[in-house]
Image (cartoon, rainbow, N blue to C red; front, side, top):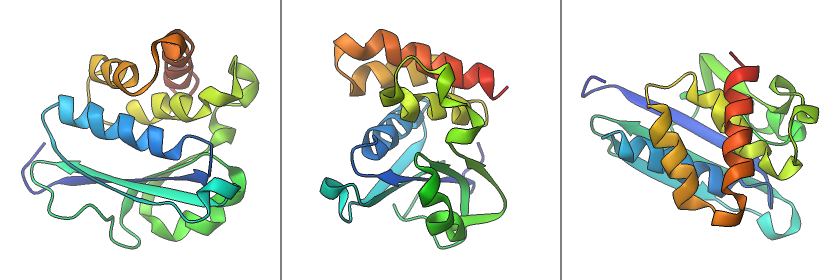
Length: 160
């Protein structure tokens, strides 16, 4: 990646859906791939199921953790009702990834939706798959590694 190029990702959803965990995984995967990474989060009413967003920016050199308005290359939304609330963050020509891309019936557990959507996102980014897998293992408890790695692969293949 060229020094001046920064990839902007916004992850949005409701409290308890794993928005912050998903952003931690993206940030760690990018860091493992050798990129400069910055991350920011807005919790809102997350403890009551309210809106939560997290920005992840990575590239050769990143100066700010906040994605500028209307400049997200990728908007990953975990709850369909949060799409319109956050669409303004997506740049023209940017990519929207939401649950409808997967068909949640393909997942063994609804709790893995965040990681399955990361699988879909991973196909769009120049971060090797092994870094994604390591980041998933580093950010989730061992007892859920297998089902989340499976969800990640499901997301990669369903959105191919």
